[in-house]
Structure formats: structure tokens, C-alpha cells
Length: 208
Image (cartoon, rainbow, N blue to C red; front, side, top):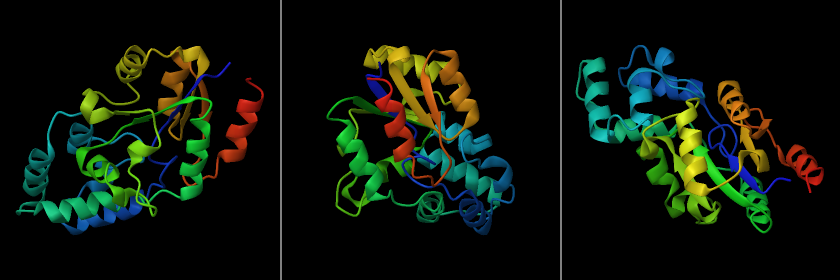
């Protein structure tokens, strides 16, 4: 019986625009942005930012070094925000309905620039932050590890007290799905931009 539902953010709650982010980071001087930016699992300095090894200023300094010029933080914020769009309210309204019956969590590889924005009222068209929709957020840079590492899932399990076998993990990245399966989670892999409500409703209706 499913008691808990864990959502990824990018590709599930918000659409991911990898090509646009690559274009914008290249425009400010990051020539190999295409090698570092991934829809699910970044590399290089982008990964370091998401796993909490460096903070926003350190990220800015490294991007400036790679670009061979000083890059202002405002340009970096704009480039980062281009990788996602605002969430569609039908998804968030559905999640609020789920919270009447289930514990609902977010587990996201993410960085402080995007999450600081998501925690403001500007995150949604109706003026609610992301925290309004989940029982708790588990964010990679705060946990000092990223998916698909087992550690980030294990930390979430320990902190929340959930049983993986009673938990459904919703994610677009296959590597992240595979780790969840190894740890005993039920899983639902979705496509970036998909309206997954019908599929999720079907799974929940058969797990009462």
C-alpha cells in the first residue's frame, strides 16, 4: 500500500529546457556548457554546485574563470533560471489533493539559485512557494549528495522515516529511477513535460 509519494522537480514538476540553458551559458562564455549541463545529472562545476561542494559565489568565480572574464551573478541567475519554466498549476493543485491522503515529498538535484527562487511567492502564478505543496523538500546541495547516489535516498529515508516499499518515486531520469528501485521504492518514470496525472491516479487506485 502506498503511503508516501516522492516527486522529482525538473522534468516532473517543472519542464526542463536544457538547450536554452546551454545557449545562455554559452552566451556568457561557458564554451563547453553542453558537456556540463544535463537534464538529470550535471557534470563539472555544475555538479559541484548541485552537490553542495561550492556555493553561489564560488560557482560564479569558476564560471568566470572558464569564460576568461568576470561574469556578474545576475547573468548567472538568468542563465540558471532559463533551464526551467514555472510549474503548471494543474500539477501543483493535483499534488495538494494528494496531500489529503499521502505524505508528499520532493527529492531534487538542485542548486541554491533555483531553490531560493522556488521558495519565494514568485514560484507560482498564484503566489505560493514550493514549500506550500510538499511535506518536506530534500535538496541535493543541502544534503551534500546527488541522485543517482544511494546516499541521498538513504538520507531521505532516515530523516522522513518512510518505508521504501510503501513509497512511490516519480522521476524522469532512468539512472535515478534505477537507484530507487534498488532500494525498494515503487517507481513511475515520466517524460519531461508530460501530464502524468492519469498514470499516477491509475497506480494509486490499484495500491489502496
